[in-house]
Length: 313
Image 1 (cartoon, rainbow, N blue to C red):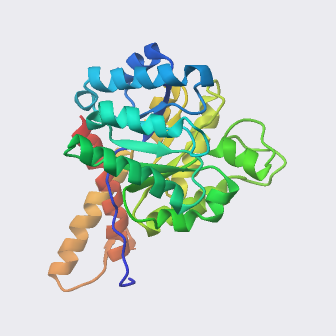
Image 2: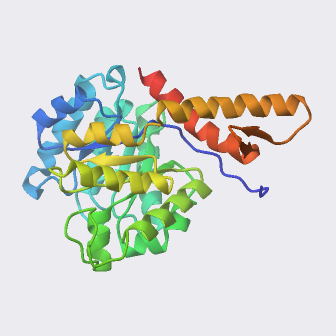
């Protein structure tokens, strides 16, 4: 191991993340009763300009009126972009009036580390002024060519950053990629055209102690396509995926939950390695296969998710 290590900044269960337009109060109420792990109330793409002000008010009311923690939900807001005049009011109004109930802020179209610094400065001042006892985290959407070109520097940014999300739709637009459905595969490409971007973002996350989350799959009438997309993301180390429709929540929860057999094997790996350690051996065997310290690290990854799911109840 390098002497330079960046441990995970914040463990949160984020298998499924439901996108909820702040302009739709009925969807907010339904989200509270769903089985989703994580919710972000959207002020950006899902809200038309004439509805932005009312969306803020709806979100403030929902954060204050609903006990999200009692429902096992982590709550976030996606603010408008730094290139709009909506962003500063999103941060000021919602954090001042309901920040004590807010877990994170999702910053869209992050292109350089300074974008996060801008939001963090505002949030820090509001928290101090309001006397909040908890710190609101930041999450960054990597959804432009500039953001992906700078993803390692963004991931390394000091401060509140907890996670990176891959925003495939805007990323496709930014890179001029040809795609047939948001998050889907172009049949002309030999394989998964999003593999490089997801893998690069995930490596940046793991290098600097961040969670790695996949974004949307647009065709909610295609559950098989969603599952395959989620499985490809999980294979490279992603730990959760957006749901743009409630029907996708259960799919994400299933894909990103370790199967019981995998959890059992992880516990057996730990047990066998403890036995080997007591006997002065650095490696052991399990079911005819060698296991060692790397096996233990992989097993602990599985168990941390299993324990988080169990704690949620």
